[in-house]
Length: 462
Ligand SMILES: Cc1cc2nc3c(=O)[nH]c(=O)nc-3n(C[C@H](O)[C@H](O)[C@H](O)COP(=O)(O)OP(=O)(O)OC[C@H]3O[C@@H](n4cnc5c(N)ncnc54)[C@H](O)[C@@H]3O)c2cc1C
Image (cartoon, rainbow, N blue to C red; front, side, top):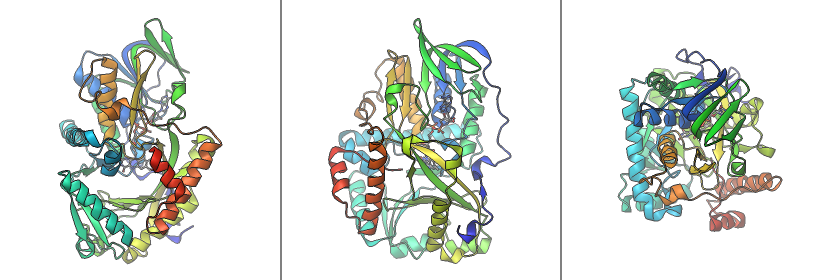
């Protein structure tokens, strides 16, 4: 284990917060509702909130297996990106004719999140800092230059920075250039956003039951019956917001794979340590390799540092003990000090992992089941902090049945290709990860395997 991890607790910095609310009582017995939402991460919480904002008379029940915000929504990097397409290049590749509209909707969505945070007084460190995508290898400088040119040609407000310019902003000798997007990302404290949305839901009359794992869905006449071990709800409509966890609709099982992403948090930087890194703009930073790191400052000037190793476990396993991975945490620590050697001696206080719902197109997909009574949004692939609010509106539109500007989008109507079943799934994911790491080490050159996947629009990302 890396020596800087000697005192690091296995635990999520964001969840170890005195602001964490007390758990709500599990569902007991039978009840009815207009809408049941399964899952209390951002997707479920936004869905319940948007449903009540659209129609305050609706009876909405949200059922969460553990506690709201405990999973991806409470343990992520907190980069709230305007992009609904997992970044501009993925959008340009897949939905070029509607990317302007998607980016307009994404910008409106991000602004609406900021507005909700302010309206409900959610104390979640919402900071509209923008983002820096930094190049740490020569081929990445070239790639960022091409990306900046195509984004600028499409009218996006981004700036290409050369090495000295980015190093003047954030002092890392490893930076060779950067793409600065001042508008497209806000930073947020993830768990506090989830808890704030939960509180907003409660204030509008949503009934939330925690520690209520739903184990089945079934038709009940013209309605749906949603069952948990301790009780059930009969409802007109259901939204599934279960992210990387086994979907309650069987045919969705091959559509996503659970991928573990790992994170470290440092102790708070002293004023002198903070001066040594600059970073007065407090932007979210991501590097530009296939296996990339993302990092940011916290309210109390820690650095949260995550990414790089996206780990898939055979058979789509999800287990508590997989949230800790010594090799990955050590590698992350090593990379941290390569980026900021001036922080040598700084210690990590927390290390954790969380599970991401990767799909083959990297951007969330949407759909319905049970003759339109059940809707779902899955597959955010590591960029769902903001996209979940858009998804909430999409699933409510789908249940409403009337076409909207969202449901007319090709991105919303189309589904990604599924992953193959095991053992091909594991072999395919491992081959892709190996190839991506190799491309990073070989100046970005993609091997035959990656080029074949590119041709059919398949991929693996985090
Ligand atoms: C380490 C990490 C870093 C990330 N960093 C970023 C980032 O910086 N920016 C970004 O945009 N995205 C990031 N993401 C992704 C982002 O966090 C997710 O896309 C987003 O939180 C998804 O929200 P969700 O509500 O769909 O899923 P979740 O937050 O996972 O919520 C799903 C909920 O459903 C519940 N559930 C599952 N099955 C059942 C059931 N049968 N019955 C009842 N409840 C059930 C679960 O307990 C869980 O609470 C990151 C993810 C991780 C793990």
